[in-house]
Amino acid sequence: MTANTGKVNLLGLTQLQLEQFFESIGEKRFRAGQVMKWIHHFGVDDFDAMSNIGKALREKLKACAEIRGPEIVSQDISSDGTRKWVVRVNSGSCVETVYIPQGSRGTLCVSSQAGCALDCSFCSTGKQGFNSDLTAAEIIGQVWIANKSFGTVPAKIDRAITNVVMMGMGEPLLNFDNVVAAMSLMMDDLGYGISKRKVTLSTSGVAPMIDELAKVIDVSLALSLHAPNDELRNQLVPINKKYPLAVVLDACKRYISGLGEKRVLTVEYTLLKDVNDQPEHAAQMIALLKDFPCKINLIPFNPFPHSGYERPSNNAIRRFQDLLHQAGHNVTTRTTRGEDIDAACGQLVGQVMDRTRRSERYIAVRQLASEGEGEQPRSAVPGN
Image (tube, rainbow, N blue to C red):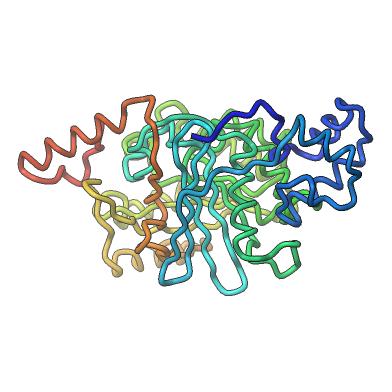
């Protein structure tokens, strides 16, 4: 477990927060910009390395502050170039961060919680239960670690990380303040200078917080849809019982309309064999998203042990995509990346010290299934 030193961790402070910190210790606000550059542009965590800051201030900072990212437990590199870091956070749990290279684009998939408070039936992260929200330092720390690993400090225009998606472990909107602070640092020129179009928050549909998000930031938005009707979505994405499709889509429309600049919602849809991949599901999805500017990202299911689900055939995937295309939608099918290091979408697990006991119940269900007649039916929702 990472020790709590009692010092202020400057890594997760926004520019405004860092300015307020320097004022609180009797220093000028401009020091915030200097220190932010050292932290985020150069990857420095040693105050003595900050050559444009006087010795007296460096000594003051060492006494009351620190620059501390999550502890790196392991780093794996896939045969396709995908990288996965397992990092330990203050709670003692471990979370995962994934970097996906594709041509000139490098996308970092960042976690926001240790485990996930939601229990989407097809996601291995959800089966680990929930431990804690990550702090802003633990969220931006994943970007800080990845950036340094590529030797891209000081930050350059052609840096390896061009996009960041809040699509790792956890539901970002349930850790609102810390996620917003971290995304602000991602976009700040004194931080990582990533375009607001290239920082994306993905939500399972916490409708009220989508409206709150619109008040404070203008990052891109993605909705984890996964089902075209409420009955099926209630099974696959249980939060739909609280915020059904009509409510969630209305919140997304309000958010996107406030962005302007011809920006659209990204709709994520995990394809599950014989569950949500049939022509009737495509027809329902077309009706649901009629007159809603969006781009659809189809994600063939990435299997994990005893999930009860299977990946559709390539023909079924192409058929589903073609039906959406014919209706005029912009549709892509995500290529599975990092599967050999369990870094594919839906496979992030980490090591969660589960406070919900959901992982314990899920393991018990798996054991019963293996002792009985084998796997559960594909339509079953593990843990329910």
